[in-house]
Each structure stands twice: as structure tokens, then as C-alpha cells.
Amino acid sequence: MTTPPAIRGWCPGLHTPMEAADGWLVRVRPPLGRLSGTQARQIARAAAMHGNGLIELTSRGNLQLRGLTQHSASAFARDMHAAGLASSDAATEARRSLLLSPLAGIDPDAASDAPQVIQALDAALAGADTLCGLPAKFVVGVECGGYIPAGTLRADIVARATDGGWLVVCGDRALACAGHDVPPVAVALAHALAAMSPAARPLRDPMLGQAAFARIGRPDTMAAPPVTRHRPRPAGPLPGHAMGVMLPPGPVTADMFEAIAQWCDDHGNGHMRVAPWRAIVLEQCAVPPALPGLITHADDPRLRIWACIGTRGCACAARDVIADAQALAPDLPPGVNLHVSGCAKGCAHPAPADITLVAGPGGYGLCPHGRADNTPVDIELSLAQIHPIVRGWPPRPTDATPRNGRTEPA
Image (tube, rainbow, N blue to C red; front, side, top):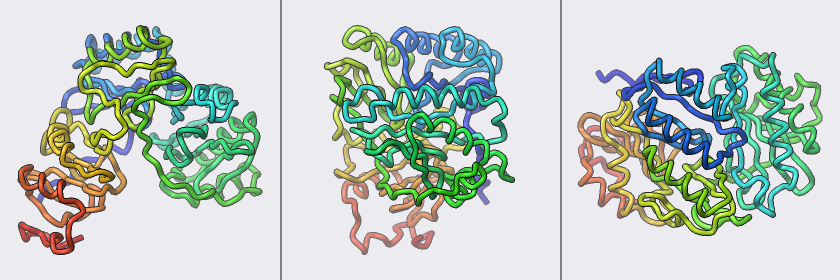
């Protein structure tokens, strides 16, 4: 019987590195999601000096560095503090878990007070010394409207700009308020959720929202307005004279990240923003970076692919899923998304995808319209067998019959 992959249940941080097959992982949360070209080069050089020189963009818009040792991880953290990219205090750094719309303050159609709301919220979280005990993956999001629509950020508490002001959304409930009230309400909700036993995440249990608002003395909430979940593809020209580029599945080298920083200096205003969806926004930039491998067109099929690090950096993975995902990209029909997972944990994409492939010792399992932990309808598929499946998606009803005959349809 195959041993199921170990699930850590938490994410690495700058001061809380996590061991992987290729060394220790750390993450950098750029303050307010913004980096100068100089700071980006400092990250790139520190990645090469202290780790293996590989840098990933996470689903939270964090930068993840790979291949460090326990000793070099501490040195890296000191370098990031010296560069103005982190707090020296681990607890303070952990509280600054923000997921931000990358066009705040530059999109003319976004909320005009969004930068002030974000800065005040970041300061309020950093200063909330008594806030502790939240789940490690707890996150607060800020959606500013405009080009990046509501529903793009998946967070436990979301501050969402509306035509009439702001909504603070927690689980299935929402409270209308002015922008200056967003930080105290969000921090109070975080305290309330931390006090619940056990501390839980509204992103996983929306019913917690009503209890959290009641705990802070605000039962005058409304049902959270429904939103359609979006996965933006900010590649190419963006509002506010910005240029979006997206990284292909997998990590990039420190040299590539340093080249992006240099382009930011040479062709923009010297600042970039890191965002979810493997995106980087170059401020005041009209020319896409002429760098091989970067995605600069919104119709690139690689934007509809999720893939984890695979055997390049994870002991749980059975295949080099990044290479396989890249090979399958040209076959992906328009509008179809693909998740190629190294194991059943599905770290790169916990939600369903049109096509989910799960690597195993004998090949891939196929989970149509499913997650990586679903029962596959077919197993031990080779890459050669998968190419025509992807090209012909969606399958005809008769195609749902398992070819290898070893599993039952999900």
C-alpha cells in the first residue's frame, strides 16, 4: 500500500524556514507588495548566495527562495531586514499576511483611497502585539476594484472596494464601512477568530463569519455578496501605464529575476509589484521585457496551467511535473485549464481544474474536473497517452471509460 504524502499544513516564512528535498525554503513578503529594482536585485543575489538561486512566485504574491541551509536561512533573513524588506521580529512578520490587488494606486478605475487603506491595514496588523494563535495560512486580502475585479483574492478576511465605500467580508457575512474603518474592523475580526477554539479559517468554514462579527459587537452585517471567482491574467499593457509579465510554471533563476529588475529600472520608474497568479507588474513601463521564457500575452496557454515543483524540489513528487506541464501547454485548448501535480496533495492548486493529472510511480492519474486528491478515472498514463487527451478536451462521453481498467470513474 502506498504511503500518502505528508501534509505540513503550514507555509514557510522568512523566520520559519521549511525543509524540502532541495534544501530549506523561505519566503519574502515585499512590504505592500512593492519592490524597487535595487531591492529585487538584492533578493536575486541573496538567493544565489544563500540558496540554489531559484525563486518562485507563490499564490499569495510572496517570493519563495529554495535550496537554503538552516544556517544560510538565518543569514538570508538578516539580509532581507537590512534591505528594508522584512521585520526582524518573527511574530510581527507573521502578522503581515496580506494578499493585495497589484494595481492599487495606479489603476484609475480602482478605489482612490486604496493605498491609504492598505498602508493603514499593514501598520495595524504589524502593531497588533496581542494577535496570536491564528492558523499559519490565515490571510487578509484587499480588493481595490477596477481592472482586477471582485472575487480575485481568496482570503479569510477581505476588504473589498465598492461604488459606495468598502465592505469587510469574513466568511459568509459582510459589513459596509468607510475606508478608515477597514483596518480596525479587520484586526478586531482577526482577534475574534484567534480566540475561537480551535482557531479556524473562514476561507475553509464560511459560517465562522457570523460568529466573528458577533464577537466584535457588530451583528448588523449583511450576507456577503456573491462573486464569480476570477483568475486574472495581467500580462501585457495594464491600466495606469503599467506592464504586466507572468512567470511560466515553476521557479525562475536569480539571473532572470535580476534581469527583470534591470528592465524595471531601464524602461519603467524603477519599481515593480509582485502579485498572485505568478504575476509581476512593472510601474510606468510601456515595453514588455524582451527576456526568454516570460509570458507577456494574455492568451498564452501557460497561464492556464498550475504545476508544483515536482521532483526538482519535493520528496513526495513522482515526476518532473514542470517539464511535463510545459510539454503539454501547446496542446491545451482555449479556455481549458490544467493542473499537473507531483502527488495527491495538490499544493499548486487545491481547487478543481478542467484536467487534473496526478503523478505516480507508473505514470499519471487523470481526474477530469477534479482535484488532485480525487479518485482518478484512469491511472498510469504516459505523457504520450496524455497529449491526445489534452488536445481533444472535453472528452466524448465514451472517452470516460478507463483505458487501463484499474479504477472506477469518480
